[in-house]
Image 1 (tube, rainbow, N blue to C red):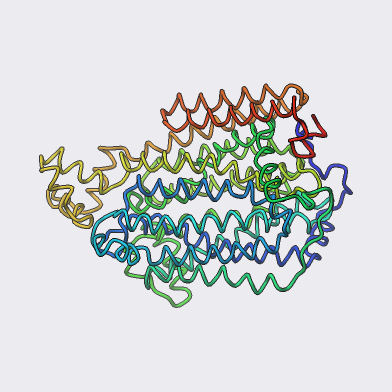
Image 2 (cartoon, rainbow, N blue to C red):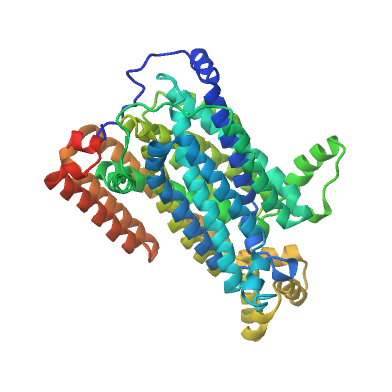
Length: 575
């Protein structure tokens, strides 16, 4: 029932932790499905942690040199497609089979990696050579966008398929612990990926993309080792293509469900900045030499290695951000077990609160130790909040429609990640990118011609400013930090997170006292939340979203009142 925050497992048998682990790890399909997820995440996060750096890489270094607005545009479309397609593909996974869905996704993802690998060369071919040496050329952007959207589509198809297999591989009474185990194992892949990408990019950036395509393709071998799980309940039966599409679309607009999706999206808006903007922020502003010399260098030398000269005395940003995956990998299960007795909405609100503090702390200092502590704090908030969303929405799903409802999980990302990508790109291009600010200082402080400054090669800007300031690169960076405060953007993301946390607290109280005849209250909460966030941050995409949200919920309410037969079976039963 949508009006309850009661877990589906509450009426299930109660097992000790040891018994739950025995049941979970005794399921061969559960283990193999988790292996598929590990390999997929290894490839995906291996790329994601270094991709923001590649996207703005200077053309003289072989990169496409997009600006942050272009980068935000790519991530915005990537986010929308990757997060919204599962809302529909979840229903198709239920209807046509989870293994078939996963198999299709692998091919699409591999194609996406390879298209991005050769975006510069393909852009030059399609433009007749006009894009050669031109920063952010439209042809290169179009090819890169195509690859990114292929990867996004493949990932979107993959998620509900693999999560459906996982959901049907867990016995009643083990689901809370099972999802915690799943979330922890996911981060094994997320932890290993950046190390693979970090090595590959020192050899050649193309090797990053190629290695990711090979890694995800290994999952075809794993798929051959287990049978399609048996589905129970009504499901979609022999529903037609259009019927599945319609039921997948209309079901999400149930106001009580959609309210949760919108409120939790604020968390995802914060979360994805860890992978979309933080890599650039670290590369531009953070001095991680202390962490390199105190931790990384001794460890590397302990195993007979030497620190790469290509690191330029700094710990690579992908290894710093990888602390997030390391903490999730080692502690997600424990956090899930410790919070299993806490109501899901309460646990999510607590986790978001911790993450808000941490995301704000990213701007405290240029010292790498502060950045690492903030990443660690954010990770603790993540393992408290994020695993419970899947469990909560799975508990709402009618039997046989687990894939559909787990697809709805991704709608929270669609809203937060899409808006966050556009917002972050604009914020960082205007007041965060070090080279952009250096060009600005050349014009403002040294009265240089704006056109001439803009025409300078990207790699020449900082040396020229340092020469004029008669200081080294570190001194120039510190002056830019003091003058333009590029760290201020983290406060914006933190405030959005706080609004999400407060909204979830209110939501958690409302679901306990309101029956489904008062779902209009949740619709009002959605509209107020989107208005409040827009009014606070002046982000011009929010009014459009508010209109879409209102229209969708109004359509659902109209159908429930006058044509309930048009709604999914579970919704008809409760109307």
